[in-house]
Length: 196
Image (cartoon, rainbow, N blue to C red; front, side, top):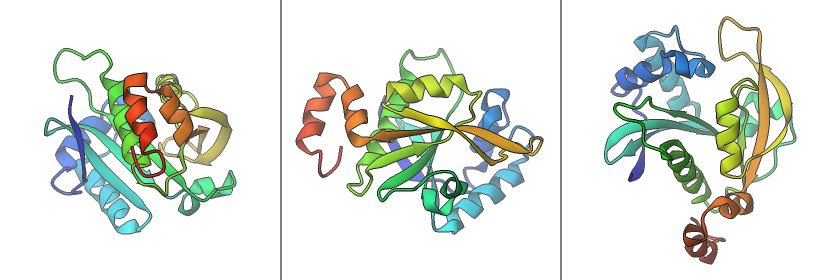
């Protein structure tokens, strides 16, 4: 596994993104009934927002996951918690396996995403608000150091629902580093103030 990130191209990447978000496993993403054009429009809005960016995660050059980074103060989260300087919001969607599932793949993706976010020295804390019913992502979040803060009511992601109940959780740089194996944590600790 060798992960890299590049900005999403809303038009060129729409077919692969649509093939992920329209599947039942991605129901909490709120786009199961979306068309490919809906995906183009959604990611064009994100690209133009100035406060929200989408990145395609590549595994040895092949699309493997979608990561979104956003400023909580410019999102609905600003109405449900006191945003702190250095807070960065994150969304993650891992692609379905194309062959035999690789043990530890999703954890490795999440560690790579967190390392990418904390590579910016201005990032002090990563904020997530996954659907409270999405137990799989809660387990993954805890593996990389997230601590639940509580359930918050947010605008609906799924058009069939009135609102979203999200589990607001936070992960500091220190909490993330504490979850890494000693082999990985030692070099990162040496550059803690700079990047991972």
